[in-house]
Figure 1 (cartoon, helix red, strand yellow):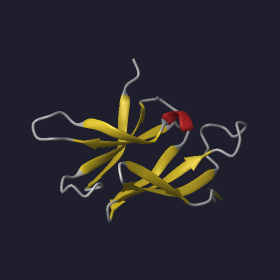
Figure 2 (figure 1 turned 120 degrees about the horizontal axis):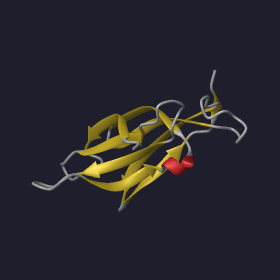
Figure 3 (figure 1 turned 90 degrees about the horizontal axis):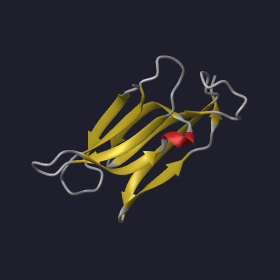
Figure 4 (figure 1 turned 90 degrees about the vertical axis):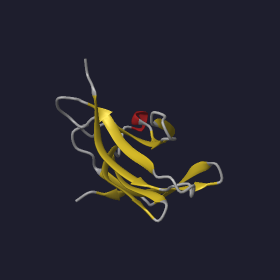
Length: 118
């Protein structure tokens, strides 16, 4: 059976309630290649198990996450992706800086343009 790997995580108060949320990057525990990642926001109330309250990046988007940070109440990430289906899945050829901020009752994504990796 294939498991799941938490590749990165960061913690901070994202919704201003005084309690920290955890942002986790997870992907399948593939033996090789570059499996797509998901980015999830987890919260925990006293005595309860952590639960996922938002999915910021769905693994179906076929991106990987190079960097992740929580600062000033926002989630910042560098996403790696592919310019076409012909690009080998081992070698992403696009990079995008994105951030999410809690607004009202949802995370709102702000994105930069895709830039070619060097």
